[in-house]
Image 1 (cartoon, rainbow, N blue to C red):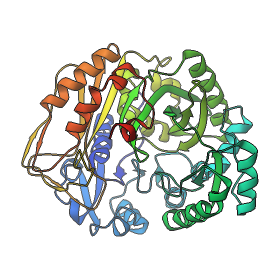
Image 2 (image 1 turned 180 degrees about the vertical axis):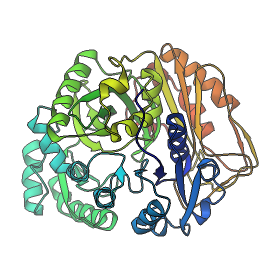
Image 3 (image 1 turned 120 degrees about the horizontal axis):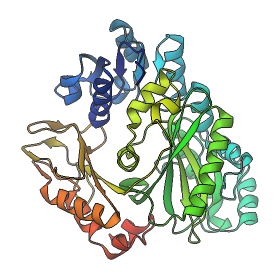
Image 4 (image 1 turned 90 degrees about the vertical axis):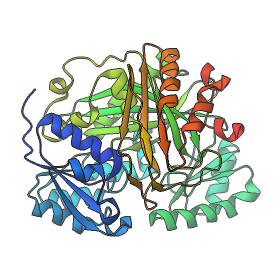
Length: 449
């Protein structure tokens, strides 16, 4: 492997993903700087990074989202690259541009590509131009209630309104008739404006019982693109993923190959580089329709790592250093076996209410085929200020049946005391006949609960 020319990398994130990046840097022999809020002073990323700098109080707006503080920390510690992880500033094109102006390498796509992909109706237009299937919908942002009604009447109800600049279910409304469309459009615009500082909303055909399929992308800075298979993320609640697996038990090889070929073409055309995920909905017939591009590493990236053997975070760093994919991947990517990830969250498994607090007892599972990505430790505190993710539990098997069996075994051995977690919920999911049969969709949790 060629030497990586970064002398030091700042990790602009927290929790398990910060620790995951630090581990990748250690594998590459690159020193790291952890930035942290006052609430994370005793976290594992702070403990295991080579340097650590406090950038503000607990609230994200005054720490992990404070661009001047992060850039100041980078300049003080003399780093030459920043890895943003996921969430926070990872898809902020302005932050990527500030890094560029400051002569610090942003480990991710270019500011221009992040900006393009962050505007959903623009991303839809680009994908459509290159033959990637998209759902019927508005040509762009809706300019009036009248245009919305006209578009919906043309494509047929139900339809869904979506925030152009957002995600996570905010600024989203399902519409079943023309009579309710103007009122729901106003609600969606207000919520989008409050959540994303942009009230732009577009409209597309609504699929009532879809599966959520996403493709993992790696692209270098020399025009080469590789698609590393797909993940099925259909087990979710209120658009928040709970469990992911690769490959999807529902996707045909014919559609997989066709969509991957079109994605390569589209991503090459826009000059995409580094890691990313392209998300789709699958209808009842098994056809895929483009939703959006996440221009960053994903929470669920370990399932792809398990079936491909590719360290995606190390690949991100090497791509940012100018290496070519052919040198990073060392041959064609082959997906083998099956992997499942359960997100272990600090929340009540019945009510889903957050459960921050001190971990008084902890046993992490192990054994063949089991991986745990976590920042948790005994007597460590899960603070109330951030997302509730405690750990990611990943099980790998020769096939889906073995992966499920190993995940069940690992969940039985996973003990977290002092707080509530979603472990009991995952045990129930893995014993559900529809999950075992692979015949679920995004309404699985809603119907079940």
